[in-house]
Length: 214
Image (cartoon, rainbow, N blue to C red):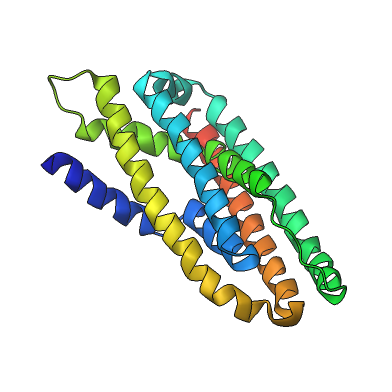
């Protein structure tokens, strides 16, 4: 129990530390509210379930040793983030037009959930992090796969709590930013900039991964 408490506290600190996932939740919650942030959080945590399974069954180690697998994954994620950047840049005008017509833009929860899943799965650093982090807490006497799943579950709970907290906190600020739809234009463009920077970051990760395997 002491091990899992320590692991949970470490996981909370890691979830709070600024990174692509919590920044993704933050900017989307500011742009579209708490429901959007929570939907994305659920998608991100679903991605963490997949990463945990890959580590538990030894697939993650095989993928990490395949020269082109992780760079291709990173480039796919960069392309997807570039697409989201383009969509967010043009979403501001749509939001203002909807507000002027007395309509509110609906939040497609499943689409946002899917964004969270893709965002997490296409970030090779998450897979490499789980591959390096989780086994450090594995002890003898119990099946390794069971321990990996248990540790992954604890990490997911910590991430869920932290990211949902970020989404709910941003919900308090979002109405002020979205006053009469004017601030929404600039906020969506700021979100687009964040997505573009995250895309560039993934391209840089892909380049580094290719360089390291040569």
